[in-house]
Image (cartoon, rainbow, N blue to C red; front, side, top):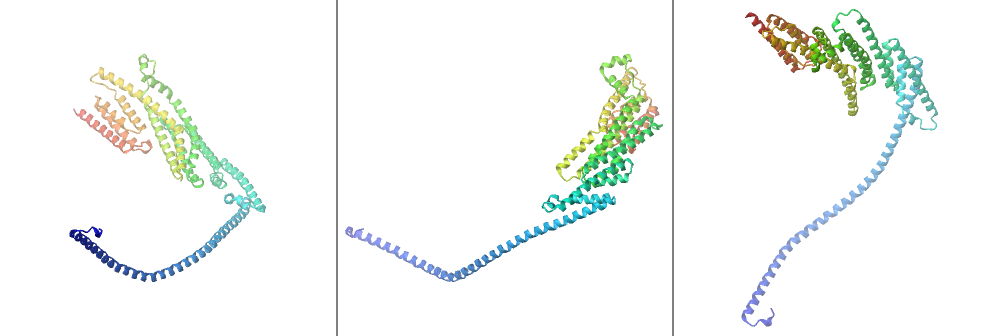
Length: 508
């Protein structure tokens, strides 16, 4: 405010108050500055003390930088030396490897020559196997390596000669039936990188063994057969057992010297020989048992359009005993086929599982499945199952129709117990062939309708004992699960209960 404007006392007092307030604010600022000034002084003193320390830090940093620079230069110098040492080491290693290969080449050349002169084919094949593992291109890369080229040419010629000798000796051993020599030369093929040829020749040798064994079995079969009712099943059993025996005996030889995954090829080739003889036996079985005619009659009896023909007698009725004998032989054939296929599947699968690569293992397992499913035995089993069902259904249908007629026309009931027994017997055979016991229990109701209680007791007792004997006999081909075994025991228990019921009837 301008002093000229102070005209009154009030204005003067207000002006004085403003001046006093401004003075107080100035004094307060001065006090604050003085207070902060003391703190700044303390901080300046501390900075002066640190300046001395920073001088020492700078000196240490300069020394560390110098040491780091020196260390870096030394490291670069050492690293260059190490690199040169690594290069020299690799050269030395290459030279050492080359020297070792040259020594091996010299030993192979001399060893093959000496071994062939002494007819020590195993040792000669070992030298050839070592020679084949050498890098021929690397050893003969220089222009002045004419001596090495001559050595390699000599070894190649020795290998070709040894291949011819081993192949000829193997064929000679097979023709002379010399098992020891066959095994001896079979081991040499992989050493000469002739795995495929070795497996092919060995498979043909096994086929010949099977063919000779089968010829002997046929000659023996032409003589009087003690089991005439199952002679074809026995012939097939001999064929399948001989095939399985050959596989079992020679499996270790293939796996040891040819590695995993090769057994399936040998089994497949041997299976071809087995299939040819298998088909011959099945055809003889069909002719000898009048099988086709029996199947034709069974299918005609089952057809609804053939009722008039059955009444007119144009379709011959099947003999129950002949049918029962045929079904029994079919069951035995089916059991032998199932056991054989289980054997070759397990052997080939176990061999394929040892292959390391997942893709190769999967491929080999597919080949195993193809070999098993494509065998003549498996296809024959499928055909027999269909034919078996036709015959059994016809037999059971005839008996059911006749029993229904007798029940309707003779309430007091005079059922033919032998026919009821045949139904139950064929049902048990059916359950055995299909590896189930469900059909057996369903047939027990027949015996409940029999009025001849004494004969019923005999039939039930005979059936129970025969069933237990077949189940407990290992050669019958039963392969029941725990669930099926429980069902079978339950069925046997029901037959025992029937015996007790019939005995109670006898006491009345």
